[in-house]
Length: 483
Ligand code: GLN
Image (cartoon, rainbow, N blue to C red; front, side):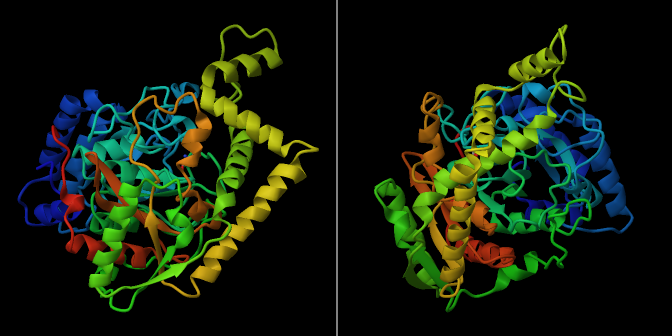
């Protein structure tokens, strides 16, 4: 039962082969049995899950239908869930029970999805290995000595290990696509503004975007359908109709123009990954796509720009965690300054503190023009590169990551080494473009992802290309041993 995709579950529920309650109990038992190896969940919501599953079964008995009605999922632990701990992977919010549901959570619940729990993540979504969580590192089900990627590492590890079919995640600089690549999943970062950020704890507000993590493009279409849409509570949400993503999965790739940036194949890329990317290019050519070399000349500046902008926004967003209104408060503060200092010093981990300091520095008078303003100018150049490229091609293709998942602890003493691994993903966030990662093969038994980028609001195109690829390849069906 645990092998089923969201699409298969929807068919099984519609055909009354099993109930949502039965499936939910099987998956909850599986999580209890297997998750101690992975640490992919921060909280399990068993009672809520059973209650939602029973309600979904009742709605189906009353003649309702829907791809998510009775479908078990989990939420990355930065989506606010009413009355349930929403920790953001931080000691700071270990005691925080959200007073309301995030829009994404509320929309999925209304569609009948069943919440099994809240998944582990890098603290405040800062990281690419899921090692900065206060709740401990998450392990990669493909090799328990390796990281699952981050920051949505809990969602990724859980879905890859077949603990559940799909989960929500967020992507500020790659946190959906990179863990998807590291665990053999399909993950989609939508266009900035497509999915509401209301109730999604902010890391870098101009870059953050929620999206689906699942095993197939077909399932990403189903989950995205439930997440996307205009939200008056989020001023950056876009008031534009949501297309039927599942309906976009039947299109031929004949004549599809795929751009491959020459900058992607530079020295930093593992040659074994480069080979797998070439194989996926050939596969898409067989399906009718036309390949064109393109250039993204400002890509080399993207990492430094991102690691100024993201910490700058984080330093501002995280100022609300002051020990006064909610979250961790130190014992016996002597005065207000002591309360701030010790509450924040005790509540935030090392990586979060590092970014707050870098961000506050970049925003400070005297350095603002040299760092923050400069980074914003680079951001515009990165966007312009994409706009020029999309005049010539329909999709941009390349590797999701330069290397496969590294060993736990391997980059802990060198944060910049980890930042450099984001080279292929962060440009889409800087430009606000949609991006998808899908399975493309294995290196030393570890999964590799191929990334597709599309123009604004072309999520349907990304999902269709990935779906056509998955109809003709079987990488996405491979299961990690032991799960
Ligand atoms: N690795 C990137 C960072 O640490 C991206 C994280 C994310 O997308 N949330 O900022």
